[in-house]
Length: 296
Image 1 (cartoon, one colour):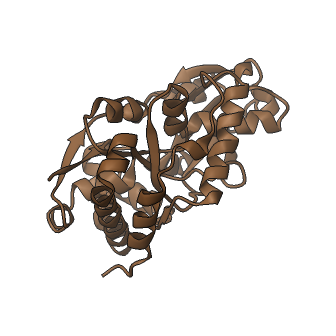
Image 2 (cartoon, one colour; image 1 turned 60 degrees about the vertical axis):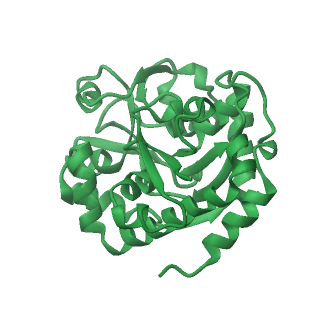
């Protein structure tokens, strides 16, 4: 029976797996790809049955659980301290996070950017409600240079290219703020009825990660062909990622709970949640076993 993976370009593990036919076809169960563009819709699409497993950053599974969707954590990457950052104009008026109060900031609302900004602002004595969210856009760099926004949360090759331009200053990176993991989750129904199939995907993701770690230039070329940007910038960005997949651990759940509590307190989540209820012991045992195997 086929297992379907949801793939959007912002999740590097799933994106690369979707382009590696030898891994898609070489598993115990056939894997099909469902492509979509907005990672913040992952929980809704899982609930609708569009696919069986998806992956995002830290915020979408929290939003899905707060909305009452029956999501279950499957696995996560190791923390990604070099993945993203908050940039400001070089020699501009913003020199501390506190300077963002009342200012427009461009970021992908509902993505890990939201968790990252909320944590940064909290540490500066501010709330997520104290900034003016502006949607992420390809023009954000120009907006920041022209003073139309005060800050820009950016990741991947776009971050590499922005910092190489010398026009921006890094106000904060994710390191020391949030773990910024890539998080994989499924629906409760699939977790309980087809745990072996989900474990098969975890194995394929582990193999895709091993391939990416060993072939960064090829991974960069695949990514640039669909997402734009230079192969050189993508190679640098992908080399910053930890190509390691981990099972659901108490550490991951504690990180997610901290994010859930913070985002509920600032009114981003609809309600407070208990992240531990979004787990399935049988599935976690199977995935832990698969990820403990030595990649071939």
